[in-house]
Length: 332
Image 1: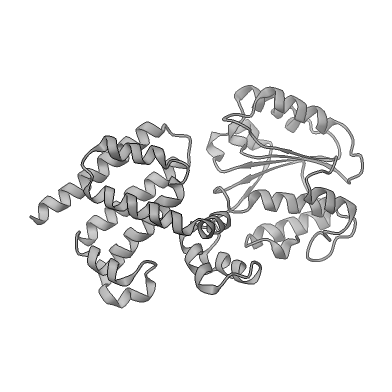
Image 2: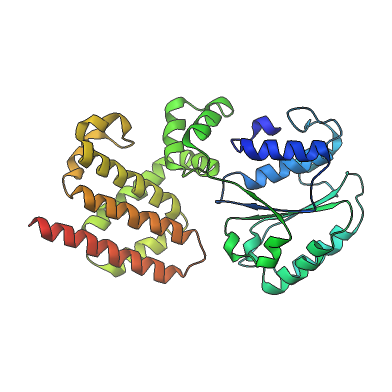
């Protein structure tokens, strides 16, 4: 892989190209942005570029010994730390720091990448902080997070922050067609549900039929189920797939809202069947569909964070049922 093989993030590519060429890379970076938009992939490509024996204008060569070892995550001068549970503990960081203090064995510099840095315990973060304040020579630390606010301010202040934004639907769609050989229609559909995440787009394609079945199952339950315990049980049973299922729900609500606002003129903008959307859009007013979109969007944001699952779910079901019943009673 080279820079040209990374989807989007052109500004970040240009920034690091200039930094590497001028020799002005710093000892610690914080890659911050939504999950699964390519931060880890970008970090690994940067590591290859820093250690590549035959770099080109497009980035690393992918053929030299350093590149091949980094691709396989077996390079002795590269450490990749990812939490195996809910936290990154102090013992893991102590081992990481000891490793970082040794000189490079075969690369140009030692680079340690820490994924989900927001999971550092306070003890672990303070242990790492000492290294960030007095970094070993010929070393670099890259912290990766989707929850920057959860990091200690002192950690953030010791790093150069590089922000990553969600990818555009067109960037994802074009990448999937040109680099992965997808058909244009399947790429367009997957990218529209992806929320700016290439990883989500690929996951949606792999499990599309099953996800759509789960979505329709949830949709009819939300419309008709009066028992919150039964609904809550369904959410718990499908907890692992819920983020993607909710993306389908949000998009369907958007289709219903758009149809209600502009009618048949929007048929080319829909992602679900026109006849289905036309029929169900009549069930609520445009304002109700808009409110439900906001409600689902908030749930998607909540379940991607470290919020209490029980509270988040109960709040969503309470507000959904209240909104649906209020709108239904006002029509009768």
